[in-house]
Image (tube, rainbow, N blue to C red):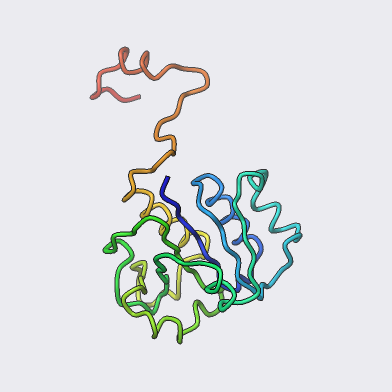
Length: 177
């Protein structure tokens, strides 16, 4: 299975990181947390936001970006409101890393400046500062997974009290409630 990596650089809000952890857990993406962080790994808000998904998570911690880059290699993409390229115009290869910066300031501008072709933006209105970190991660992650045709992810579900086949047989497509 191709591997997707989500990298949070100096996250500040435990609830956002918990929500990102849950997204990573349900998609099979690895989560990399680069410090310093605005909370501790045992923060109650972090654990609560991730619910009972922690057991499914591939999680790594790093003290700094240099330490992260020493230990990892692959195709790196930097999500930023300052980027010139749209996130959906990139073809993401296997073993890619999507980087997201801290809530108050984003990724370090020096990192962005040194990697202009790897910087991507989620389009939004000019007068809006940015999307929520957890929402941005979900948008980026699901674009990559869509391009990869959602490897090993379940793409259909079942009703608890009803059967989809019976519903389709009983109701023509043009008939609504």
